[in-house]
Image (cartoon, rainbow, N blue to C red):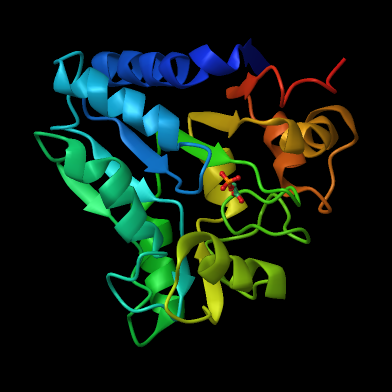
Length: 238
Ligand code: PGA
């Protein structure tokens, strides 16, 4: 079943944070996969504030990173691990019990993908942003529900966005993503979508037949999908 939560833009971040706190309270040992990108930033701000005031704790939780650039050096400002630390993890007074970033600096990336897939078994929750082309993580168009955790070739526009949007020092050579198979196997999936520019792709993902042109459309076959959309992003859902 898909739960669609359409929220006022001003309330969106706090509603997402409140729902996350509820999950942490119910399951302190939550195993959660988290994205970066621009969309979750206000929700992470609100979540960090709630954690700071003691609503819940990550102390027993395990955090798994959704995706990563390949070819950027450790510490690069565009790296997803750098950004997740800055946007959320470094702001928690008590660190999560475990944080699994992605071993994109390993010599054997296929082996690294197997390890990331192994540590992403048994996820309670996967949180996702929605790409303008319908991707989730780096499961780009052409991905299928059984697409595994893997290194993916990125569109030129995606590679360039690492520099243009996030200030990467160099152009990444590839992407590394949690597979659609692991996303769809999680107990719960949240899709975070804000802003008018996402309205057409959100409509495509939720209203048209599922298909590989829009990997996010496969999320509808998950029994526990919640879409947190602001009113602007939801404007074309009818
Ligand atoms: P955004 O990216 O949150 O920065 O819009 C989402 C995505 O491309 O996955």
